[in-house]
Image 1: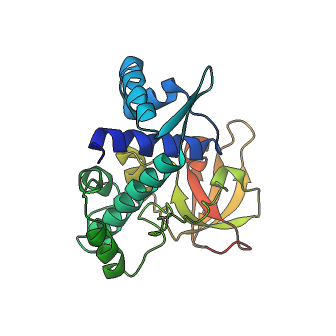
Image 2: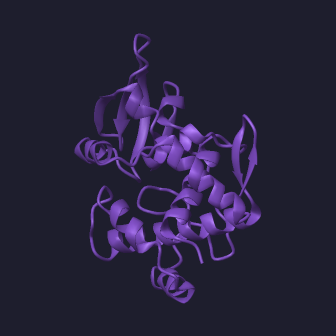
Length: 224
């Protein structure tokens, strides 16, 4: 049995490692992601190390052990399934589901999680486009292309976001740049790398580089 705090740390380490394509995760990165002090992170990592949930390498940081990764994926699966339930069944907006799912993900019942998965029709992605691990821990590859990567004349389909903050998601809602939107790059501005894009072949607007680098897209040759 592990505490919610321990589970949150494992989930955070997994997410940070995934974002950097594997390897060891620095203590300061964990502190920043969890909005806590480095000293608190060090204390928790000692607990996780004693429970064989992380391995440590001097000057490199920590890495999840097999058991630690299994628990992290279980937490991610629960979290993202609850996000789907909140968005699809209770009609919460995609900027509202994260904080509530943070509370619901610590349920101890695997049967409840499996039944929730079945009830939702075994979804593969959450409302933000993030892949949902199956009950065996298998997880689909995340799309790696962003709007910022697309060149003039290239097209894509919005399939996810890198940033989940409420202001960012509200902004995407405001400009109708949401999941499922078809985009085509009309112009890349050399000065600031902003993009002029065409949405669903009808609406043209300008997207800042900051926005473009946080919107994930699938290219036509990829299976979205």
